[in-house]
Figure 1 (cartoon, one colour):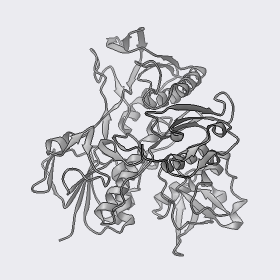
Figure 2 (cartoon, one colour; figure 1 turned 120 degrees about the vertical axis):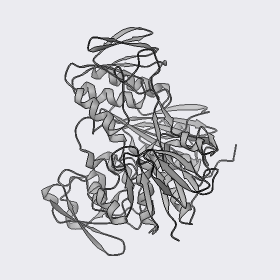
Figure 3 (cartoon, chains in turn yellow, orange; figure 1 turned 90 degrees about the horizontal axis):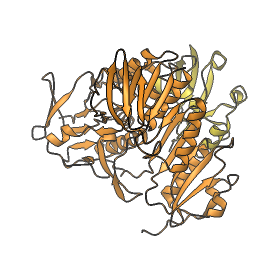
Figure 4 (cartoon, chains in turn red, green; figure 1 turned 180 degrees about the horizontal axis):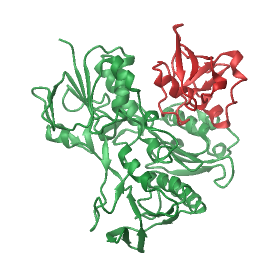
Length: 106
Length: 413
């Protein structure tokens, strides 16, 4: 199990025990973390699962491909370290990963 | 007395209803009565990764089992509601149980249209809608198996893509003159036709199926263009809204259960959401019925907004996606009544392409293949009814949103 920390806009931190191979989005949904709408169920079709990756982790993730970059541009609260949670996959290397959630996904 | 909600149907819309109710901190009792034995789950992966064996059932669930316990939701699986008594505000199930409601939400979805030809029955044809359907189909998967798919729509083609990659011999029989005719324009149909053929799928158009005959362990599929021998026949020939319950209960029925922009039926205590509804689309100015995840999700959100007393009328650009091989088809809008169809990008190139449909200089719809940025921009531009510069549209190096002449909303036609 891999520990992922999600910080909500209200400052609350939720820790999720994630299974390797699932996306960060699925880990959040399974872990019942609010704030990821994931309207398309993880298909890179809606840009409603955006998270801000904490700065020290950004370079440790596989960079976004063109499709994800294109989708990110449409996030209403796009930030410097924004990623789509459905495009980041849980592995041992991501243990202790910290991300935070935007004020809203719409 | 606490207001209770009963949801009939345990599909994707039900999953979103529960998600939204929890987000709005709904405190009253909630019951969900579903025909299938499974918690509300997503159907799109059934004809894609789930069929291919790349993910298990738990990853299909809209919400995990713990969510239901935590929220105190009563989930009643494997149970069919057989009648609604709107005077007593009570629903009755096939096993004689009663559930009373303050608010009822019908999320009954749709069911596969049956293939009605001589010889068609459980022994000769399968359908692809539920987890159980797909488990049964996947069990038959073995290299060399002769799979005949009736219907060249999304279900049939997604199945074909997974099956041919799994080494099956795949034939798709489409009764009309092109594949995905209901969903996409001719140029996009042709592109997918070429793609499937390149992968080894045999697609026959104008090949309406006339009869199915059992021949030993195989099935002879008799169609307009000849006879095809199959080890397995799967039909994907459309879906029918499950509106019988509503009809019997005296609710207004049109092309499905008739609802307004807040998903209310002709009874103020009853809502309907998802595949089963005939609903008004504010952007396109007409009533439609949509079979899509987006519609199920957005109508569920709308219904909950009304139920909790902060109504947000439904106003959405319909969108849809289909994954076939490495091709990601994403569609936004409705192309009916288009005046101009414009190709953006090279269908045979490596950067994807888009088909754009315009009327009066504004974007009505877009079909994009591996061009997610165009898809997202199109959704916004269709909603805003921006006037577009066609000369710039056809240059794929110019971002789609930069092709707007102005952001002025076009006058009502």
